[in-house]
Image (cartoon, rainbow, N blue to C red; front, side):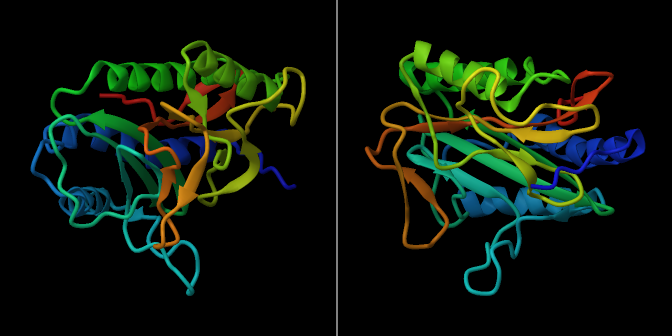
Length: 256
C-alpha cells in the first residue's frame, strides 16, 4: 500500500477540482432533477458543465478496454447503489437518484456524490437520505490526525445500524487527488482503534452507501451497475476530505 501525502498547494488544487462538483450539485442540478427527465439528459448537463469549467469528466473510459465506463457521471436510481450508467431511464415522481461525479482539473482529481429526491418521496426514503448524509458527516468528524480508519468506519456503521439500515460492504471510499482512486481503501465499517492511522496531508473520499434493506448487492449484465439484491432502495453521499492542521477540511463542501 502506498499512501500519497499532499502538500498544501496540492490540496488547494484538489479543492479546486472538487468545487466544480460542489457548484454542480448546489447551483445546477437541483432545478434539473424533476420527473420526466432521463438520466442521459442529466449526464449531458453534468459533462457540459464540468467541461465549461476547464475540467475533464474523469469517469469516462475507466475500467480499461474490455468494458470502459461510457459516461462522465454515475447516475443510480432507487435500487441502484453505485455505478449506474446513464441511459433512457426516465425519472419518476418519488424516485431517489444518486449522482457521483469525478473531475480532473489540471491533473488533480475531485470526487463527490449526493442522492437527490425526485419530487415528493416517501417517508422511508426521506429517512434513508437523512441517515446517509448524517453518516457521512459523522465519518468526517473522525478525520483527525492520529485517529484510524477503523474509527471512521465504526462511527459510520454504528449510526446506520442505529437507524435500522445497512452499510454496503462490497464498495468503499478511497484516497484521491493525483488519481481517481488511491490508497487507502476507506471502509464504511470497522473496529475502533484498528486500520491505517490518519496523517497530516492525507486526502480521502468518504462515501457511505446505505441500503434500506439487506447490505447485499449484485452487478447487472452491463458489468457496472450495482443493485440491491432485495430490490430495496439505496442512498450514497460522498465528500473529499483533507487532513489539514490535524483536522478535517472538506474540499467538496459548497462554497459560494
